[in-house]
Amino acid sequence: MKFHISKFYNALQGVRYACQYGLWYAVNKNYFQQFLDLKQEELSVLEYSDQFSRLQDACGMEDDEEHDFISFVRGLRPDIVERMTDCKTIHEAF
Image 1 (cartoon, rainbow, N blue to C red):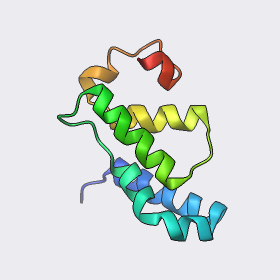
Image 2 (cartoon, rainbow, N blue to C red):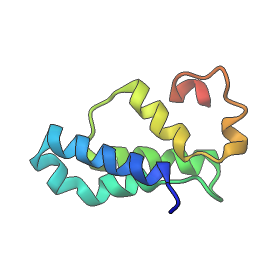
Image 3 (cartoon, rainbow, N blue to C red):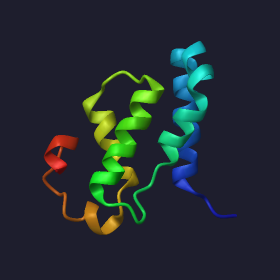
């Protein structure tokens, strides 16, 4: 049986937000799942960033710079992440 850490992480984040935000999570679950599943793939970094921001706004999530950065980087292609060794915020990533 293969263990997919990203699926586990997404499920864990879903449970965390369901417990923390209750009704908010129930209303925004579809946007939240799209947010967790967002990957850059063939998008440019700018297109990916726009989609990331749109879904983040649609979810109505609280701003948390560290969590936002981790979520943003998690969806980027590995070749781009390798070049971001000194970045600690989304703003620095650009």
